[in-house]
Length: 219
Ligand code: DC
Image 1 (cartoon, protein in one colour):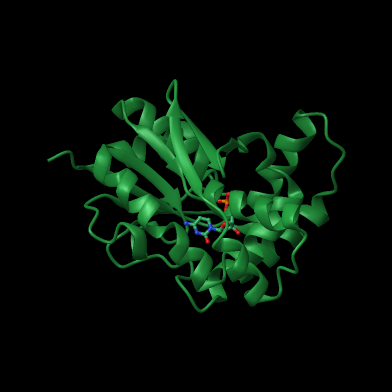
Image 2 (cartoon, rainbow, N blue to C red):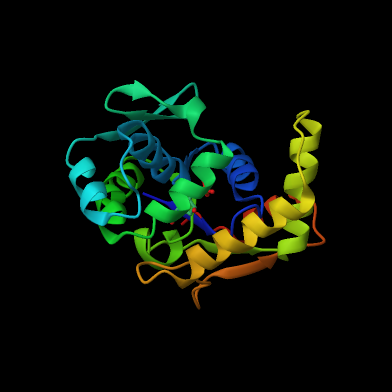
């Protein structure tokens, strides 16, 4: 099976770009952040102390995370319930950033990710896809942009959605999440030597998609 592996920091536009790339290729797109977010939902619902690894470990034994593509769109399930609509909140941004640093959390969903990529051609996006999950992929990309540019995009996105947000809060949150993602001991976010790095700061979404498609090897 073929894959396109895309990593990069929070707010860089990975989800949007990855979905468009998948669309052009006629493949599905796996958003792996959704899996960490579904685990965060489980932690929140179980009211456990996420700073306590023993409590998180005990919870992992009780949960099953699954992914189904329905009409081309990823749905993420927690113990049989479709939790997709609960995943993209600020609370889950922070909770998933903390819990994804635990190796037990990461190990609990690695086979799921690899198995999905074994079943079909897939665009997979996250933080450790190029460095860990799909190390053997022939198509690896790292998207980057300054924290200020990413915060600006996030800010605009939320204002356009009618939300009341503060730019500085968004910037601080992104910087904190970058720190969590890049400095954790297990599978930190890195740009691997064999990844094509794309600085998206002054590129449009379509330009980034084109740049990726230009470099994807399909044989
Ligand atoms: O991409 P996202 O914001 O939905 O990811 C949610 C959290 O999960 C984020 O803090 C980083 C983490 N994550 C990870 O550690 N590894 C991945 N492959 C995907 C996400």
